[in-house]
Image (cartoon, rainbow over all chains, first blue to last red; front, side, top):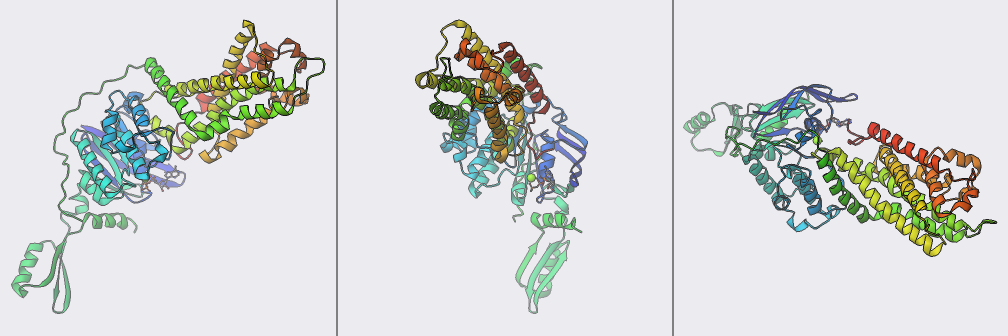
Length: 279
Length: 292
Ligand SMILES: Nc1ncnc2c1ncn2[C@@H]1O[C@H](COP(=O)(O)OP(=O)(O)OP(=O)(O)O)[C@@H](O)[C@H]1O
Ligand SMILES: [Mg+2]
């Protein structure tokens, strides 16, 4: 079953083309990563899917409805973590989470959510007294309090320390295991790589590559690099058959020093994808 | 970067989720219930926000204490002091401050900083938000008026009517005045372009109206053309209605037309309420000024 289906999405702000013909298919239960540099059009795309921004053209179907015309009950099934929020209501963490829980028909237990995002100690604190990373965890808590079928996370780990980021990854895996469909955006390759089952790389409003982290951008079949240090310096060969290259090397020269076999990392692939688009 | 990553694979079937139940198409009960929840929340937020208390809640109190202490003369041939005129008229200021001034600024800030955006992505019925605003403004206004009347009676010879009639008048003047100012406040919140400019943009018309409508300067000291100009706006009529209740019939000669014109007070305030409501429905935006 499809959770999100997008065809030919376009959006411009005056002269700036933010989204330039995007197609997306996200299956129910899938964790989908939208990866791209600053200004690529991630937030614009996600906010159109949330029904917050309008679009110029294209078909959009989210949980069976057009987000631009969806009724109130549709919002019961989505959760949103915005890229940025600066509001500091004079409320405590527990008050605001408890309050938002009442807007949903099928909320999670507020106490449990506070625990999940590890704000138990801050539960009685006012929002303006939280640190940046704690605020971010509150954002995540408000995104999941309604127990959504589809969760949008726009750069959710901005400002989180490494430990919090690891716990956040656990939280996402837990949600995914319960069947929540998740669309997350990120600049962090390692994050998307470990979390998402499928990734789309977006640059200048276009999707330049799509696939699983292992196959993205032809990474699985990309040539490997075999390097070693010979008597006359560094040798590098690029080959589709690295095992054979090493065996041949051994047969010819015996043991060599500094031998490495590398394949492009996701980062290499990613940088090439968004860089290649420059030309 | 590591090659060996474990992935939550797409092919693993997630456990089936229970089919989402649907809301009934019309949900007035739910909107009302959540509206009351939000009324409590908004009221709590209001009294926790120190700036708002200083700027919105105290302004009429401070002006009353200052102005009514400076100007204490008695009108010739009448048993009415300028202090009393202030004490009655500044109730209008108090009502406008906690509704127009309060909402105009706070909703603009909420819109700009992402508070409205947070709400609009939830299934909260939009009407619950407005019920919460109106409800909390009502509570704050009642407290505001109790304080103003208390100070007026204790220090500035304000007399509370003993008959039931003036109190009935008080109720409808209060309700219509508050309703019109609330609608205008919600509508005005769309004017400031950002949270930073909100206070300045909303306060300017607020203060100007105070001066020309007979709140900060007694209506007896204003030139007719200014009073006629302010007759277009609701504050003059709100103050006039309040004077009719607390100054009594004999002071009616001080009014521009020699009477309190309660019929026109009702008409103008009701018209602004309806007009303000229409303006809100036409112009209210949940999105910030940067989002298209
Ligand atoms: N409200 C707006 N008005 C005008 N231009 C906008 C607006 N929002 C976004 N843009 C432009 O649209 C393009 C895409 O912006 P978007 O916010 O979608 O990028 P992004 O991929 O989310 O970037 P980031 O990683 O920095 O969050 C950018 O060039 C941006 O300047
Ligand atoms: Mg963004």
